Image (cartoon, rainbow, N blue to C red; front, side):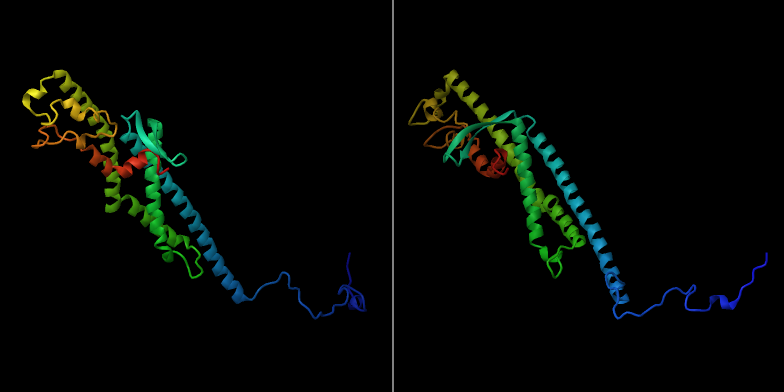
Length: 270
């Protein structure tokens, strides 16, 4: 079959050109392309936004991971320090009654108190370091720049855990807890020693008893069972006015030097 086309087939007002078109005096503006310069700026801004989001989640994950790491460290430290301590009898201030009350704190709670105390102190050190350096990780609108924040945070953690100041403070708390534990042990031994001296009944033959009171038990009996340990002012080194060679345990001094550790142990930092 042979097809034949004629130019006149497309002539006329109708045909394949369709309907008439008219120009309008307004543009579609919702939505439409923005200017190229604006689009270029938006690409730059969105790149910064994506970088900020990446750094923000990285910073948040780092902070959480660090907190868990510190927790594991302090929890292990508390368990090791208190592994041989079954309980602690202490006097704790009750603000509701305005009085000190006798309480017994058992090992599980002692470990919890010490861990929480360490975490509280370390947490405060990190927060204080950050607070002092806020200007270094915020922009002119006081918005946090996560990439700069995480650098300062890492320095804060190092300062709180590995600096000379941190090491000495952690060491001091460890020694404080050890001193409290040793104080109880030494006081128990002093109690036993006192009982042995009284039972022996030949102490006064050496004239080491107080010159104004020949019976040793009358000099120290009223304080020998003091749970806080009163030997620092009871069994004094030899001197003309007391004539005793029993050396003080220094328990009062230890209690004073261990005050922060003691507060942590009974849960005041929780």
